[in-house]
Length: 91
Image (tube, rainbow, N blue to C red; front, top):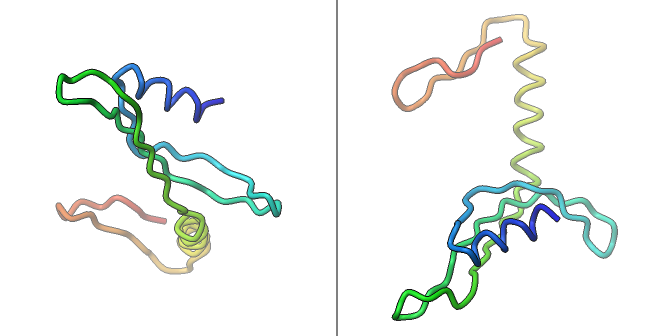
């Protein structure tokens, strides 16, 4: 239902970037998906559809969870620094 809302919004000109949601495949496997929905317009700027791009981010999510466990259980100080040199993760 939330995914339908993302596409409905795009049809109304409200684009969505980086919407994460779980998807269950036909075989029952859970996949984490990152969705971007962009309004498609004609040469007169009228909405004619939506372009939706989904990316499987299951491995990335699992890696982030493992990373969090490592930081939480470490016996030494661990910290992360962003591109601006600011600390953004620590234990």
